[in-house]
Image (cartoon, rainbow, N blue to C red; front, side, top):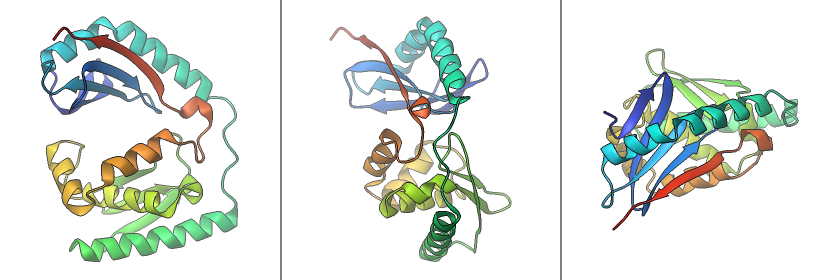
Length: 202
């Protein structure tokens, strides 16, 4: 039985969200993660899981097609100047936000990643940022900073993480939407592959 937050179905990472929508929706994200949106009032998690299972062949096909396209040429990577500039910005923002949140110092690293804007190794207190953040507006890069710092306390994207983000950065959902729906640096092959949906009877 799936639950809200992070799940694994046949080894595939599935993020389940209860949302104010009228239909169950499946979305394959860059990197192969699957997002399942389930209406808060019009469907149960069991309904969502049943629909996901019915469309599982489509999910696997969409993941395979995305992986095949992503193997092609990527966008031009940031220049050394861009890398230095964004590294300085992220180190400063990380230090400032860590202090604001009462966190001990955190080490920052930079590398190019295909499907993540950042990652947090909470045990080692190391945050790795994608160098492609060099092409992202400052407020969206700052969202990534807060997102990764929050993983020091909440190690997945479940209710605790969402509650902390609501306190720390109330507009984080809109910032996330802007970041993930735009093509600042990612090639078209890495954009989300959208959507199989089912309309539920009222």
